[in-house]
Each structure stands twice: as C-alpha cells, then as structure tokens.
Image (cartoon, rainbow, N blue to C red; front, top):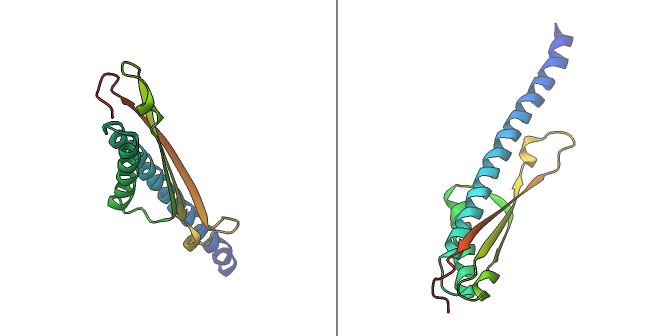
Length: 132
C-alpha cells in the first residue's frame, strides 16, 4: 500500500498541475486575444496614425489589466500604415500583443518558467472617413 501511494501521489499531483497549467494558458490566450482585438478596434477609429498607435497600445494594456492577467513582459505593436492610404482605399490596422505568463510556481519538471502567448487582430479603417 505504501509503495502504491509513493508512486501514485506524485503522478496524481503532476496530473493536477498539468490541468492547472492548461487552464492558466487558455485563460491567458483568451485575455491576449481580447486585448489584441480591442487594440485594433481602438486604433482603427482614430483620425491620425500617431493617435491610432497610442490609442491601440493604451487599449491593449488596459484590457490586460482589466482581465487581471499578470504578464512578466508585455509587447504591444500597432501597425497603422493604413492611415497613409489615400481616401477611398480600404486599409487594415493590425495589433499584435505578446505576453509572457509566469508558470514557474507549478513546479512541473521540464517545463520552462514562462509561456509566451501572442495574438494578432485587424480592424478596417473606414475608406471614406476624414484622415489628418
């Protein structure tokens, strides 16, 4: 009985840690995805390229904060080159959010201490809206 417990309990503990890891990574995926979509949308409704980049980065950071995602490092890029297109031309604003999530506290053998999660989203810029 003691041998079964000595083998079974660590295996069960590892199984539980893997379930927690999967849940934590999936929640982080959803949060990063939502942040990328919010950044792209916020950037696409601005009037200038510089305002779009600033607004997109702010929206993504706010979204990650509101969802309570603790990133060890965060990188937010907004491609607002569509604002340079002439009127009547359709363009897309693209936002990419990268977050490193700390998973070292799970103590799973062979697992690195962080997981990098990246999401990209696009939102159209109105082809006939005034741009500055």
